[in-house]
Length: 509
Ligand code: NDP
Image (cartoon, rainbow, N blue to C red; front, side, top):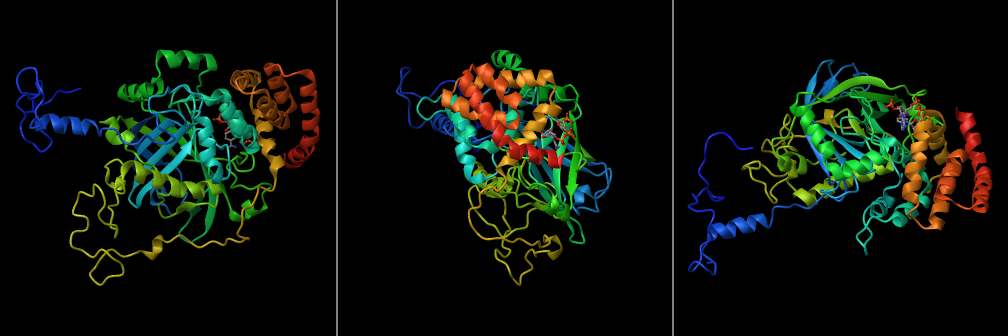
């Protein structure tokens, strides 16, 4: 800290300060005088130091760096940052936990946010993902309720296993994400040792107007490393900020973390014919059907100069697209297009795009938006503030417009039509991807948490594990000490209910 040229202390407007240790008082015992404007200014600013905490992803760490394109994908997208092999684009990335407050521990069991802002010459492109390829829910109407259950009980202000599991057990589509969250991948050892996924499907389109569906996977070059439940408990006491520290210290040492960006690509025809809805964020696209292709490298090589300026005020939004990339109809994504920008306006103000970390460094803003809190520049000067105009104001460029695509259907509130397929992928993960150690840890992690919920909630949640895979359900039931009759009933019930899912699973594998 500090160093450099010795400067004279001033007030906010530059006036020199003569004494910064003694308030101005009438006599040496006080009272303090109203005319001590330096004191008033200092207290008044201190009272306003905090900005609203993010409602989710409050605790985070960030760093700058670059993205380098490593493959030719111009057949699929006209995005300029992907237009040439070897092309580099400056980035800022932020990693976070989701449910905890700004001072919460980095080693909580929680998904990790994985957000990357690319300062492209066509404006900023934000990729706002998680370290998990799927999510708990597929309909945004459930999101505020879901988050309430992962945070604190409104009466006790304590984390509440009843709220947590009540909601999840009543939301069967969460079972895939629950299985990942309670596996060892639910507590990454550091931010450097985890993958990042778009989770959503996005649209890429080329300069002929042809479009494709894509999913992004940032695969860590440091290798996956996780903390066990016991290691995480110990870490929470020893160093609650361990992942923040690790990212900072690694970069300071010159060990720059990197991730290889892979994409899965699908044509609209493949999507229409596929056996499940590829836009459903509770599912992955199986690698065997849609092999991931390496297209780039993300490298973080710069620590922030100031945490508040760059990390606390960094604002990522899935609505920040560049020509060549757009949203898919994924319902969760559609809601995030609104909600992220909206929450930044609340937290940082309507001109948050002027904050240097958020400003489009390589594509200056030329819009007709004007004024608002903290608009501090000439703001278009005396130029026209409306469009169309005959005074040479900035013009829309038709080549930047997204190609049309057809949508059909009745307006209405549509329930999901294939509920049984919610259990296929978590079953595959449990049986085929996890090894014995992974399964032991998964069951132990679930049992230690679910044990805090009421018995009827334990039973309802355990029924979902049975549906994914009987062995999974049985081991959780045994771990919870659920009675023999109840477990028998669950096993029987889930066998019947599994018929559809199993049939489906066989057909598709
Ligand atoms: P694959 O065998 O082709 O892919 C398995 C994927 O699982 C790999 O990407 C691997 O990631 C990841 N993985 C390995 N161990 C774990 C673990 N303990 N917890 C979570 N993920 C793990 O199979 P499929 O593509 O058919 O997918 C099978 C299942 O794997 C899915 O149901 C899903 O749960 C999980 N998965 C699939 C992904 C996908 O995009 N298809 C992505 C991530 C998970 P890594 O290479 O980093 O080790």
